[in-house]
Structures are given as structure tokens and as C-alpha cells.
Image 1 (tube, rainbow, N blue to C red):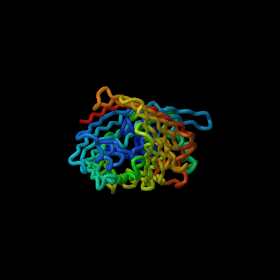
Image 2 (image 1 turned 180 degrees about the vertical axis):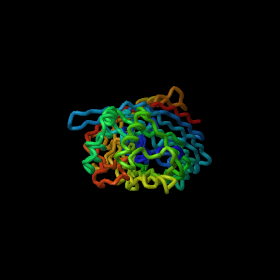
Image 3 (image 1 turned 90 degrees about the vertical axis):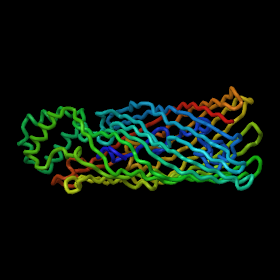
Image 4 (image 1 turned 60 degrees about the vertical axis):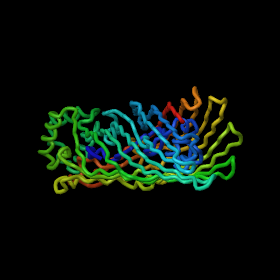
Length: 473
């Protein structure tokens, strides 16, 4: 990924925080969004390329096309015991998908898809209390996947796809958050009590100006290079009514080979003056020249196992249940290295994450009300992979419940207009995250004094309307 901001990389790809856990997005099909996003054991035509590529070969027509877009309207709230409250002011995210499937023979099909499996949009504001961890972030990761599907027997099929993932990111966080200048001054005075009497009133006045304002911030804007993975699956009809399916999407590691840092200030002239005066009393104090650096880092995008079963009691009904195993345990920490190492290596960051593997439980049903109208309902329960002591506002992670509904109307036999709506709510959670004061990192004071802990209570919810079209001929 290119042009990534250095210190902001403490959570390099913290994606869609209220639509799904971790950084995954439940918006790969409008039809399946209405059913709780099940699909591993369902024959979905071209859309099977995402859910289980083994289902692609069961296309009814020679060509199957599908496309759609979802609006993710996510909201979060943070509170602390002293009554402090902050709310997000997020722009809508718009993950999209498009699938094109082609039947080559009765036993062989192929296709290509593009979708947005990862993405995020969160804005806590420039000057909130957690600005040192995140101010705002917007990220989209796209996946292009050519796929092939083979029917080994009438009731057994397999499929495989090559995932090619790329994307872009914008992120901002405070290098000096509101009130941190006075906090750091207090820490320095504890280690050097004699400095207190030496600090002139002019410095104290300048420090007070930043009690409610982020003095300096870092921001990023960059593109991710293409990384490769794979998606495989198998599907088996036990009888005419029951189908079982399993699929696997591999882990993909996003690598930052080189990045640029940009700095912004509430008032650069004032801050330069303040840092100059502080430097007279505390040698080594000041802003690190990170905007003159490059860095490298990497982040795992987790693997996924999906195991499902579908049941068709009549020609009009289909219900499906599914368990998704998400390999979040691969995300242990984020390590950021700065270059040139001889000058900036002392600012290298190891940010512990210690995610754990998690599960998503899904249930959905579809009813053909008429020959032209299908209606759908669904629900899912999404476990958090984040421990209480590593809860960060970049991804205010918590267990979530999603409730979904949808319908499809066919004005023409071969054309389907699809609608879905999802409501996702988190089960409010207390948590904390501990890191270091960046500007104290290399000063001669006790290590314990360099540590800061940010804690409070988080609530999140999201509304997700979706619209899609599918056409087969």
C-alpha cells in the first residue's frame, strides 16, 4: 500500500466497524443480504462465486449477470464515567458487487466477479478525547475473482476462484491530542520537579491553548497493491430437499512496502514556538520529522471457513443455516518500521492486537409468494475477535446482532429487481487500549510514565439498505 501514514498505521485497515466484525463487510449480494447473508449451501447462480464457487455450475441459464450496491449508515457512541460523550459523524459507505457467470457445458461453468469484502468509514472528529488513536478513517478493499465450477456428479460439485485484492485508504489521527501537552508536561515535571519553577508564563499560556484542540495530526491517503488468495468450495445434494456446502477463502496479507507521512497543525507557528521553548528545558523534546520518512508494515486479512445446510420443504420455500469461522487469530500485532532506520528507527512501533478466532452464526429463509415475487428474512450473530484490554475506537468491536429482510420482483421472467434492508446493533461494551505517548517515547524518563490508557463504553449500530439487479438468459 502506498502513501500510508506512519503513526496512523497502528490500525492500518480497521474496516467496516458497524456492518460486520473486524474488517469484513456483509454486502456481497442484495438477495442474500435479505437472508442474513447465508449462501454456502445454496445454488445462487453467478453470486455463488463469493459464497461457494461450487454452486456456480448449477446456473439455470447460459449467462447470469448480477450487480448491486449497499449503503452503510453506521453510528457509534463513546462515553466515560465523568459524563464525557462523543458520537461519530460518518459518511455513508457504499460497498458494491458485480458477478458474471457463463455455462460452458452442463457440467462446467466459469465466471468473474468484483466485490468489496472489506471497507470502513468512521469519523470521531478532530478534537475528541480519543483523537490520538483515530480521528477519521475511510477504506475500501476490492476483490476481482475469476472462478471455475465443475459438476462431478449430478449431486456433487466443486469450485475454485483466484482472489486478486486491492484498495485505497484515507486516515487521520492526532499526534498531539487535546490536553496532551499539559499531560506530558506533568509527566516531565514528575521526573524533573525542578523544572516547574523555570517554566515561563508564556509557555503555560501556549500550552493552555491546546487543552481542547489537537495541536498536530497525521493523515494518510494511499492505494494498495494487488495481493493474491483463493476461494474454494464443495456442494452436495443429500436428496432433493437437502443440500450441504462448505467453502474456504484464504488469508491475504496486505503489505506496505513504502509510505509517506503528512502532518497538519491547529497553528503551526504557535506549536513551533512552543516546542522551541520546551526544547530549552527538555533536550530532545519536539515533533519527530516523520513527514520526511518512509515506512513498511503489513496486515493480515483473515481466512474464512463457511459450513452450511439448506432445506427446501416445498418448491416455494428454502431455508438455510450457516456457521462462518473467521481466522482473526492471525492478527497478533501491527509492526511499523520507519526509514531511514539510522535516524527514525527509534520510532518503530509494535502495536499489539491479539485478535482471537471468531464465529458468525447465520439463518435465513426465502418464500416465493408469487411467480414474480420472492420475500426473504434472516438474522445473524457476529462474535467480536477483540479482547477487552485491546478495544480501540478505530474498530469499536463488540458482539453484534443483524436482522435482515428483502424481496425480489421480476417484471420480466429473466430480470430480477432486488431490495434488502439490514439493521445491525452491537451489544454495548466497556474496554480499553494502552499505548505510548509518541513524543515521550525516547526521552529519559521512566518507561511506566510513557504509557497512556484510553478506556470507556462503546455503542454502535448500522442501517444497510441495498438494491440490486440480476439478469439471466
